[in-house]
Length: 437
Image (tube, rainbow, N blue to C red; front, top):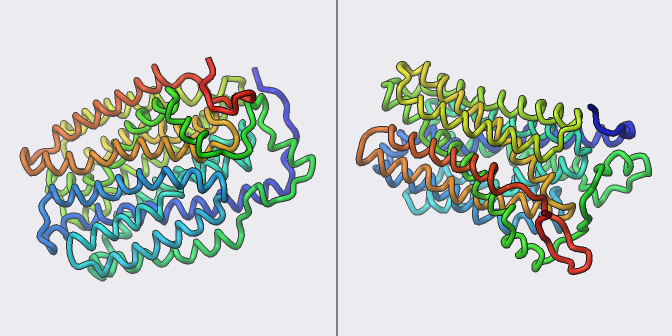
């Protein structure tokens, strides 16, 4: 049975949507090329600077931990000042920092560069969530989120060959300097062409299209006390823990997959740059398919929350099963496809996780809830690189890190199944946030 009919999409809204999703998609590609650069140069930098696997794991984890901490103020800033300013400034900062990484001289300066990159990149994903929430009807949101999210995994898939060729041609320092330039240019494009919804005067037809059917509650702005109140909600904690399972898997593969292929299957750095395209290309396909499936279900009358939770639990469970099989697959190409299936299902779940935020959070708190979810998930993800590096130094095998990754993914699926059930409402009388029953 189809959902209720809705007004036709006004032409200006279509134009805004195309501009927003196009720029965000390009930014997603650049973002994840920049983010994955250290993993590609992992072996080369360790040899050049004399780092152990444990210390490289710490360096990789510093980014995710700094990114997690940066999420908390970013959510409030986005809800108050909008994505035009906050994301534009973030893109500029991460690009400048990435360029400066080519000048580091030791572990301490590398730490500073990774922290700067994390702070700059922290507004991106949540800005995309808020932009889609502001400019798309609830029945159309999963597909644009899938497009933007698949762009990030496209960035991950094309990063290995691009970064490997650049590193072999200019060295790892030259690689970092060159890849920071596109983000600098895009930050200017975003600021010039994008406008926040609150700054656009909408006519009645445009308001009618954008009005979400069955809105639960209205929150035009979020105060500090309301923001703190989010941490008291079972739903929010469940989303933090659940998405932690997704990001743990992402960060294990993003940080250590090239090294895994080189160490376990004895292939060259150049060959790794080519084969590593496969896993993240599979992840991009999972992102796109997730959006299409979710929007199809919602348009057929399935409740958005039920649709997204189903994709989350199913995707994370299948991802865990695929990860368990990876150590038993022979050959580098086979291993790459095995990892690809793990990432396909993980990203199938991941896109649904961001769509779930939009259905769970009231208007005015979407960015805050999204950043709190990202904070919790990246605290969890920050353990993946360092645990993997520590175990590698002691066991010289990736078997235990992959088993742990599977367990974390299953725990995340259980969190979405058993904890994340009730949407967040605003009490009109008490002016506080609460979960519905």
